[in-house]
Image 1 (spheres, rainbow, N blue to C red):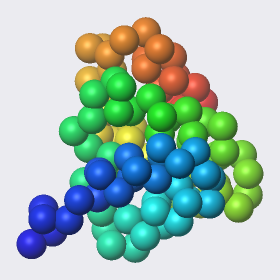
Image 2 (cartoon, rainbow, N blue to C red; image 1 turned 90 degrees about the horizontal axis):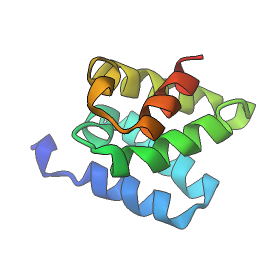
Image 3 (cartoon, rainbow, N blue to C red; image 1 turned 135 degrees about the vertical axis):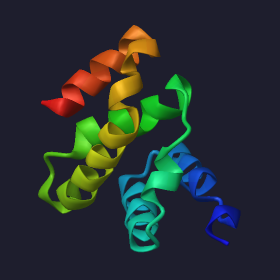
Image 4 (cartoon, rainbow, N blue to C red; image 1 turned 45 degrees about the horizontal axis):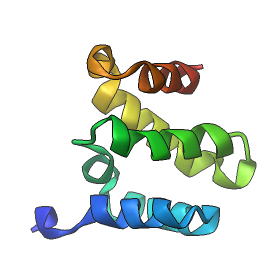
Length: 99
């Protein structure tokens, strides 16, 4: 059962390392397993901030851009209608992401 996989936990642990290669590897594996939506969904502002900051910082790097564009699109699909309830910082990060 796909819900038994701890995709969100795996992504959170990768983000804690601050190592771009580890984060990218986890994101690629999640994408390969069709788990990006699960890993990126159901997050509050505190949980969204690190992934948004990572994406915004690294998305222009050609090495990272393909997977980070996929992540961006997934995040925007999941949260774009609910940004109104988020803190100012998260709303600003979403605006940066949409540019």
